[in-house]
Structures are given as structure tokens and as C-alpha cells.
Image (cartoon, rainbow, N blue to C red; front, side):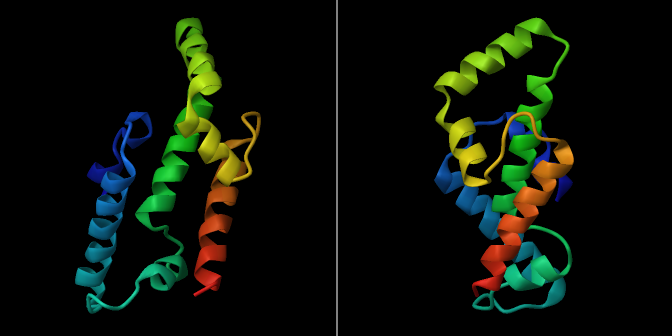
Length: 123
């Protein structure tokens, strides 16, 4: 599973591709823990303290953005700031998770995990 997330934050992935990856991720849980295809594994995944792929993707991407924004490499930071001004992906992610660029990595983790837990509570 770790191979699936390697460098994911730096990639531009379509919603359809993200959905396919999430289905694959959930099917891994179904296979390992003997769930049927029609059974939702979302609540089970949340109960294990893990996250579904969609939220894991958001976490990885938010952490990537955070690390790039505080990089010592001036050119990389400048490129990032141009990207954040014009990049919908960054703005959508940080707005959806109610994050600020100056928040800590721990706050990013907490926001993404809380968002997923709230989704599971609705089921």
C-alpha cells in the first residue's frame, strides 16, 4: 500500500483516477478482512485508526504543500507561491479541510482525520 502513496502529493491526479485508487484501496481491506463487495469498509477503516485513500490523498497533498511552502529552496518556494495563487487544487483542498498554510503538520493531520471521522459518523 505504501507504493500507492509514494510521491502522490506531487502528482496531479484526476477525480476519476482518485476514485479508482480509492476503490482499489477499499478492495484491499475487503480482501484482507473478508468483507463482501457490497459491504462498506469506511467505518471499519476509521475504527482501525487508518483513513480511506481519498482522505489519505488529501493528507499527503496538504503535507506536500506545507513542506514546499517552508522549503529553504527559494526557487521552489517562489514556484509554489505562484501555484497557490493560480492553483485550484491547493485552494480547494485547504478550503475543504478548513486549513491555513501557516498551520502545523499536526493540525493538518487532525483536520483530515476529523473530516473523515465526521463522514463515517454520518453513515
